[in-house]
Amino acid sequence: MGEHKKILDWLSLNDTNSRHNDIRKQRQEGTGKWFLETETFRQWIQGSSDESQRLLWAYGIPGAGKTCISSLVIDHLHEHASKKNCGVAHIYFNYKEKQKQRPTDILTSLVKQLGNQQPEPSVVLLGLHERSQKEKRRPTDDELYNALVGLSKEFTRTFVVFDALDECDRWEQRATLLPMCHKMRESGLTLFITSRRSADDIEESFKEASTMEIRAHEADIRSYICKRLDAHPAARSMLRNSKREEGIITELVEISAGM
Image 1 (cartoon, rainbow, N blue to C red):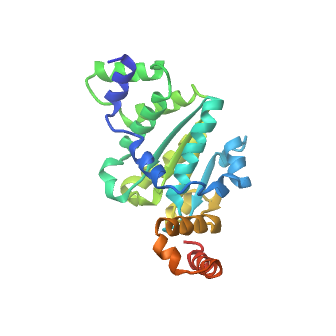
Image 2: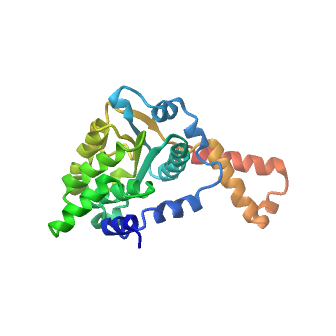
Image 3: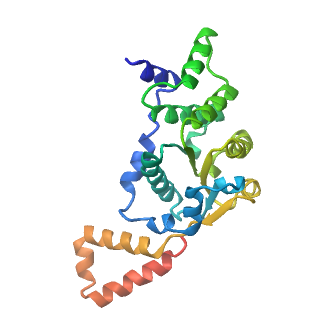
């Protein structure tokens, strides 16, 4: 086993991409393209000297497609990263996995993801590993955070995506993670975060950040409905003619607006 992989496995044996790959498979082709074309997103990815603009908070109601948008943003950032020497790391929060998503777990995953995007172990990772092994202990949160920032400096820019931040426990997790988000931004990292707006602590924390509302987009809904109809020829044949089909599709799109 190479030294690089050995250090990454020492950090964590978890597959940091499995959840992302599952979501990507479920994503309808072309869905969410409108989001990447908005001026707010373009300004965020291009970068700004204004520190507050390095954090983009995209909020929406349950079912609006926030996780789908996050997965699309992650793929877009990786494509951008391959051309610009950027680092990209992400976390999909899930209320069912709170015990696996403590601040220590989050930092460990982010450090591993950035380390994995380098061809060989950096001085930062070597130092973290050597110090912990020498003292026979796991890295502290402060050491992991410092490693995250140190690794981020080895890229032109570093992006972090947090999906569904509201699914963290408010007192056990968000009370630590929200200040950490601002600390990351102040350290030069660029963040994309999604959540429901109903979480008042999140809204208060991000009141000065760039914001966007995620709503079910008409083109995405229409594409999904047509795809479902294509998968069920019997249902499509029951519509009999194109005018009736278009009318029903339009009605379904209107009913689903904003979901």
